[in-house]
Amino acid sequence: MWYAVLIGAVSAYLLGNLNGSVCISALIADDDVRKHGSGNAGLTNFFRSYGGWSTLVVAFVDIIKTIIACHGAGLMLASYGYYREGLMLGAVAVSLGHDFPALLGFRGGKGILCGLGVALAVDWRIAVAILIVFIVTFAITRYVSLGSVLAATVFAIGFGVLHYNNPIIMAGGIFIGLLAVFMHRGNIIRLCKGTEKKVHLIHRELNK
Image (cartoon, rainbow, N blue to C red; front, side, top):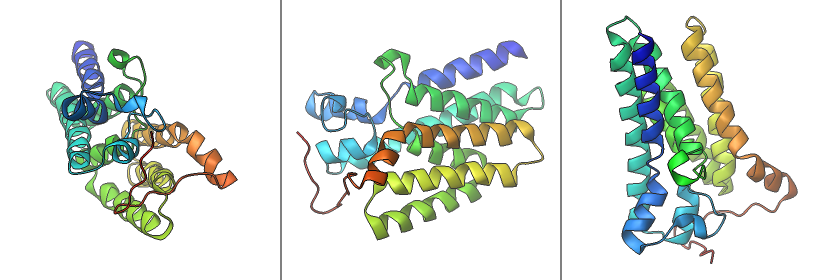
């Protein structure tokens, strides 16, 4: 069983290294998104730097890789009767791989799209909740970071409330949510200072 746990975790972590923003910026512009704007390999920085339909491809890559990682680890442990725990094993590993990718110099994203992928793989109710929180917050404030932090908080609370009877799934969900909040610590400071930049979907601001 421990062999399956190791293979599932390592595979999910390596999938996490497949960063959508980095890969697509290399494909469409022979560039690295981390050279622009905030220097982050996340969707917001990609949108500000390149914009267009390719932003949707970035989101697709990060969400799908997460779902594959979760179910892959789940299948590795299914024969031992721990499929759902395997899902969360893959979820934690792919999130760490996305945020701290060894193959990309440990400079990754902030985990919001991974969080959505995790929620879609493990509990669709949490996926719906965080999408609503993010969309409403962004629509009102135009702050992607605020919507992301609130969505990550709801993510952690959701797993804590809905999966209290399974300590592994509950703990994994809370960890992923808190990790996403931690990865946004710089944004939180700027929000408090009033210096955080808003995002406008039609008239986007180019950071050079």
